[in-house]
Length: 511
Image 1 (cartoon, helix red, strand yellow):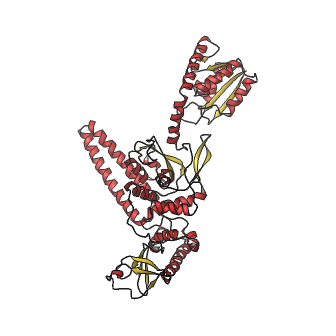
Image 2 (cartoon, helix red, strand yellow):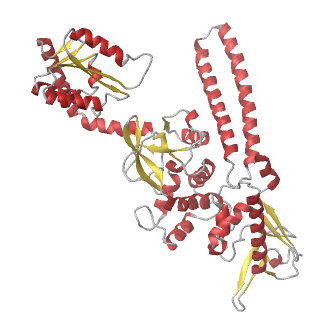
């Protein structure tokens, strides 16, 4: 019996349908009996296809004496795979016919073609290592897991893509909060890498491999774009770093993480110099918003800390508490003789400030501000106000930035075409460029307006849960939450004023 085999990976206007393939094969067979095998939606890159596997079983069972296909690549696109199939055909005395290429292994020319195929198969075997290397970069371009160990806060899971199992990153829920602590603390406070490392190690928080943290390990985490929700700002940052970016800027929608890969000197740390490295959007979801991620990059790129404030170890109000009279910072001090804790204006200590005739006890101030923080958060929670970073505003900004980038590309293309344009076309193109630039400037103004609306949003997750667990939080976490919620606290002798980062009226506009 003859076998007709047809395959089509996807329906396209420029591809021949399986039904058409079968009709061509029937003409080749004539009145001889046949059985049809079809695989719809399967690639020809490998032989992992249900109907093809059944065809091989029927051949080995002696049911088939000839296989007919419309074209050679319908049965396989791999010369190496095809040479293995020919071995099966010959072993079972089965002929093979390609109707369009007039390939028939029962004829002298067909056997000659077979010899050529075997030669190419040997060549493919000899270049297999190069193909593996190329495949590594191809997987990166498609956003697949690049192999090796998954970074901190990620595990590896299998999913189906084009009916093929591939590996991607998935959040490790036990490590995600620690990861956010690292990014948010470094980005939004004056805490050094060393102090973050000390906190992690003192609290028994281990690295992915179960070891203690050091500067190199933490820096590698903070520089890794696998964690960032990649948006147009991330595209621009890495573009300016002379990275090769596989995706268009329109793919940077603020949801997925990235892969960054490329060769580097053996003595150079990962992500230190990313020039000529390749950046691809991954299939996995990012964890850290781009604003937080980029703040960390700018601090590490410049190798400097922000203004040195808020490092006090005696109170979680350090860095935000100010004198109500002179607006100068207040120090948190401890009198070990009497075990008293109090705040003192630094200018008062040198007789410059004339305020504060009363002793400002630390416990009294902290208790008062704690109650007001709890009340504020409770009010916002009751009104369903989300005090996390405003994702709706971010999405709007991203869309506008994508429009700006697309306009830039149009302008660049038109400028390149001006070289060969005649006078009439040049005049038209100049007018069009002016029109596009005007549109771009309007979009830039929209971005600035949206960013002003977004500036006071609080980029911290699970704030309500954190507040409810306040008594169990250590000093650093209380300090972090305080800085997210409060801009400044002004202390008077008999009053406390709080300048909140959370503005209820503004937030109600966004709800």
